[in-house]
Length: 394
Image 1 (cartoon, rainbow, N blue to C red):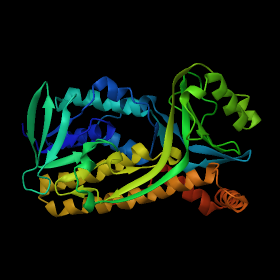
Image 2 (image 1 turned 90 degrees about the horizontal axis):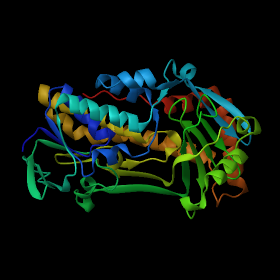
Image 3 (image 1 turned 120 degrees about the vertical axis):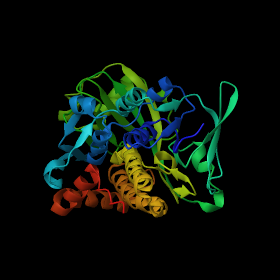
């Protein structure tokens, strides 16, 4: 088999890259070790930055998102019972976010790929890149008991934190930067109307709360919990009771409870690997970085990587600009570190840290007071939340 760009991973980043390349006339094949149903079954984020929304439109897969997605002009922050609304649209000159679940993004991209006739090979086992520093890289994988070779010009590693792509780069080449947080998020999904029209990020002495949503009838709530907690420790009743305790009374009174569709606990970490390229292999999304979900950046950062790699590859194939290939890591990392900073800032601002002393807590309160009472502070939160602009590729 032969293609121009081989993509490892059929999550949203791999599918978005594949769709954009296909529309640009660049042949690509996607390899995915899981089944389509497994990929669609992942419960993930649901807040899309302005840049991600624009890319979905550029890829020609935005029709349902534009019809069903919920445009949010602002978010609410709560600290020690005090509520502050961040007017995203006003503070950024018109930018907003769209609430549209990652599962729906993936579904739209999968359907578009099927309609295009572009190839995705699911249940591809033992995927392994080769000759990454050579002129002719290739990938081997197993399908139906046979070993298959896929020759290509370039490889995009969109296969997540535990995927083979990053592991295929020699360890001595990479630098790892990591912060592991001493708590996790317990998430509950329910077919209940959201407690608020806009997302609520709430600090409480018992732990952080996020009131999110997937649609006008489906809600997603999160509680900060110790890493030692297990999902089995949390009945639906206990979850709803704790959520009400951590919310201001006027918000808790509006909460509609119901049976959980899914519950899970996710640990929080910040992680970046440098560089994001090795020869003809380019790391994209979670293969290169993880952010705590507090800033709603995970999926959006993956889309940012896709944007840079796609624009570079278009110039490579259409203009012969192979000199741009070595700029991918620098371009992507510049935006990644800014998003890492914002996610770290929001996490530090709103969570209860078990080892925080009295000074730390006063500094946290002062940070909140400054950012929510200063026009510059409010604008900083808003412009980071809707997503910083992409740098030009040239």
